[in-house]
Amino acid sequence: MPNSELAEMVDTSDEWIRARTGIGERRIAAPEETTCSLAVNAARAALDKAHVAPEDLDLVIVATCTPDYANMPATASLVQHALGAPRAAAVDLNAVCSGFIYALATGSQFINTGAYRNVLVIGAEVFTRILDWRDRSTCVLFGDGAGAVLLQPTDTPGGLLSFVLGSDGAGACSLYVPAGGSRQPASADTVAERGHYVKMQGRDVFRFATRVLPDSVLRALEAAQLTTDDMDVLIPHQANTRIIDHAVRRLKVDGTSVFSNVERYGNTSAASIPVALCEAVDEGLVQAGSTVVMSGFGAGLSWGTVVWKWHG
Ligand code: UT7
Picture 1 (tube, rainbow, N blue to C red):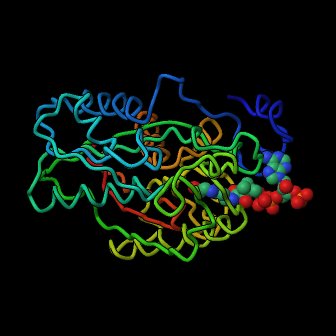
Picture 2: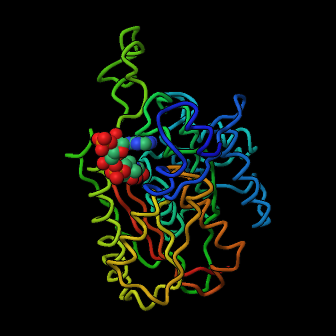
Picture 3: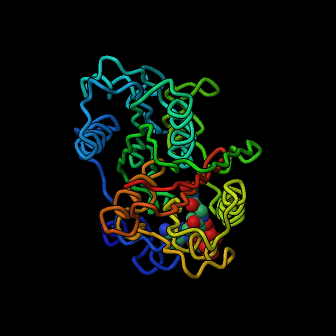
């Protein structure tokens, strides 16, 4: 969906959206598609690339804030069944836009302890289903998508070098869906009040994001005993070009490739980093031996950064 289409729905313009966010278009899932179906497509592509059969999966983690069912079951269980992975445990992880980073750090622990050998980590969202298409301050920002990675043990040193995860629940209502949970269960009133859609204090989130993104990148690099000079590729959460540019200025990174595809997808929440990672790999930006820093931030408020030595 290009910006021009949104300009027909709400009082906005291509110029405003591009200037304030860097977004030019976003993908909208077809009516029959769900978070599960997008996740399964991404998962199959990752398994094919890794030459691993679904039967060999030990664990499926789906990072999402737009699960197929609001409360139960977990979308990961649906994905596990659709893939045909009978041995795999399955669990959803919701840290919203930081979800993929949390899931990557979590999945890596099972690999590092030797408990599991094949862990599938997926970030998937049909975020456009929780958008209020009458609210120009949010509906122009988000899109749908999914990305997946397969984690395995290896003798080559590298992989996850460090991680930083964080949360500040004081900012919970800066970005949230008020109704539909146990605090405000669904009712005719909550529907009439449009309480099942995303509400956001954009400026608060912007201030938070521009602070936390560079801070957590620096802390994660320090934890890996590295500096920005060692960072080959930075893959930030794809929310807004201005947030990314701000972070790059603060980090003073010259020799680092900073990946961005927000122009084409908008903010796909937990899917943004794995989609960007896959494109960065396909474009040859991330290569065997690259030090890749991936950093997410979003509702919670939450944040997470991993430093990853890519094996290829
Ligand atoms: O994963 C994390 C997800 N969240 C984010 O990344 C959001 C972070 N925040 C942002 O990216 C920015 O705050 C926005 C892009 C959401 C908004 O940019 P801003 O520069 O902070 O604008 P603003 O909210 O201060 O609004 C400026 C003006 C307002 O009009 P007035 O009050 O100055 O007359 C808004 O009503 O822009 C207006 N506005 C719009 N105008 C045209 C808000 N949305 C739109 C729109 N089109 N879509």
